[in-house]
Amino acid sequence: MHSTGSGSLRVSALIMLLLAAAVPVAAQQFAGAPAITARLATPATQGLLTVSARVDEVNLLFTVTDRKGHFVTDLAESDFQVLDDHKPPDSIRLFQQQSDLPLRVGLLIDLSTSITDRFDFEKKAAATFLKKTVRAQTDQAFVLGFNQKLHLVQDATGNPKELTSAVQKLKAGGSTSLYDAIVYACRKLQSGPHDQLVRKVLIVITDGADTTSRSSLGDAEQAAAKAETAIFALSTNELHDGEYPKGEAVLDLLTRYAGGQILRAREAHQLAKAFAQVENALRSQYVIAYKPADFRPDGNFRPIELKPVREKLHIQCRRGYFAPRENPD
Image (tube, rainbow, N blue to C red; front, side, top):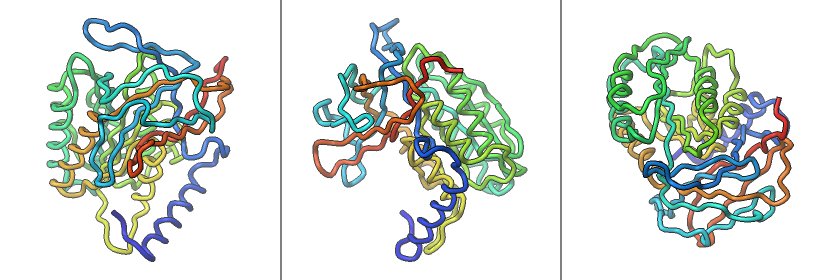
C-alpha cells in the first residue's frame, strides 16, 4: 500500500518518532492496547442474543482474511489457538461465527478547511453507510463532527433517518482537534451499559493532522483502550511515492493495535469502497470469549495472541487488554 525502499525507511522512522513522543506511558501500556472485559452468553431476549459481563472473562472480536484479502467466515473454534499473557486460556466460554452482536458506532468526520472540496461526497457516503449498516432494533450510532470544536450533531440512536439527517447538517471550516474528538467519542462508548456484550467501533474520516487538541495522541490511544473499541481510519491523505505524511503515521498508530485499519478515502470512489470494506468487516467478525488462566484483577496489561491453525490466513484483532482492577478508583 505504501512506498518501498527509502520510503519504507521514512515510514518506520516517522512512526517510531511519533510513538516515542506520543505514548509516555509504562511499557505494559504500549500503544493503548485495548482493554477487553469479560462476557458470557445468556438466553435470547425478544429474539435477540444478549450477553452479560463477567470480570474474569475476556471477549475478543476479530476478522480473518486469506492471502488475497478475502474474508474467511466458516472457521470453527478448533481452527484457532489463543494465548493470553503467553498462556492458553483456562476455558472457552463462547465462540461465534459472523457475529450479529449489537453494534455501537461512532462516526467522526473532520470538518477542517482542508476537506472543503471533498465534503459533499464525504457526507453522502457516510449517510449511505449509516443507512445500510445500523439496524434500528439492535444497533446504535452517533455522529460527531470536529474542527477546533466538537459538534455532536446526533447522539446515540438506532434511527437511520435521524443519523443520515444529522450528517447533512455538518458544515466544513476551521482547524482540527482529532485527538480531542477520539477521546470524547471513546468515553461515550465506554459510558454505555456494561451488562451486555456489544461490538464497538469508531469510524474516522480525516487526514490525521491534529492542530488544536488539548489531548495528545497517547491520550487518544488510551481512551480507545479503555473503551475497548476498534478504530477504522478513512484516510483523506494524498500519498505519493517516497512520501509519508505525518498524519498517516498518526492514523497507523491509532489503528494498528486496536483491531482496525487504515483505508484510502481521498477520492469519492475510494471513500465508497472504504465504507463498503468496513461494512463487510463488521459482517464478517468472529467473537470468542474465554476465561484466562491465572487471571489477576490488577490493572496490568495482558497481551493476546490469536493464531490460525491453517497457514496463509491473517487475523485482525486487538493485541491485548488491561485487566480490570478489583477495586477501581
